[in-house]
Length: 286
Image (tube, rainbow, N blue to C red; front, top):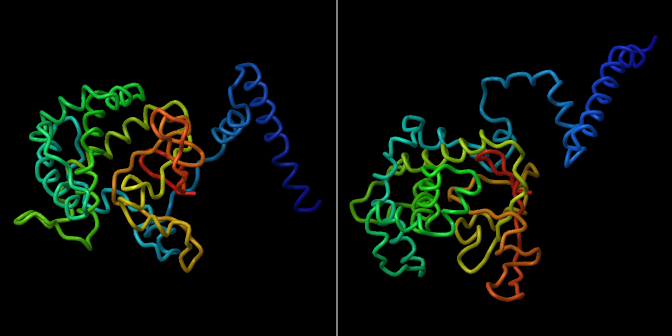
């Protein structure tokens, strides 16, 4: 008996039984996506993957795009993983000041607004917005929606991205230059997204972002995105971005297959798109 015959004899019956059962379950439950249902049923019966060896990230070793898939803990430390205690609120004022200074230096200065004066005034303002309501509708708790509303505001996006990038200093006179200067806020953001991911019952859909879009695209916030389609010496395409990113599903009002939707009309700006697969807080650009 050949090796192939031995292998088939050992595995054919369990495979056929598992596939038959998965197919029957998919039909019985009228699964919305039968192929995914069957695949996930088979994966659930599979043996667990072997534990990874205690070594640096394999992908990082194979690519010159260093820090790919580097976790928040690896970047700024793991000592401040909190959300409910509210320590992240203490990061707001210095992060706001740094972000406003950065945007002004880039010619994108924002007008003084009363709602930015304190963290409480910003939270009160955000809670009245449609974005806050959409975050709640998307499954975030009130506390998680509060954090994300702060993190995704333009000055805070700029400040966190600048802090995590070791190459650029804090422009605020006397301001901290520590890479972990907004660690509470950054960890609160990661914790909120991870908590939402754990509650998810289905896989996240592919999400989209505009590569360059008049100051609002990925490359406008982090210039390294401009080279996302250029492989490194190993052929790898990817990066770990330092900036919090707002992503949109294909049905979002501002997304169109060929560009950005112009509010109130059928016009679009034709700009490059980036499609991302989301899993928890890890994004893989395709």
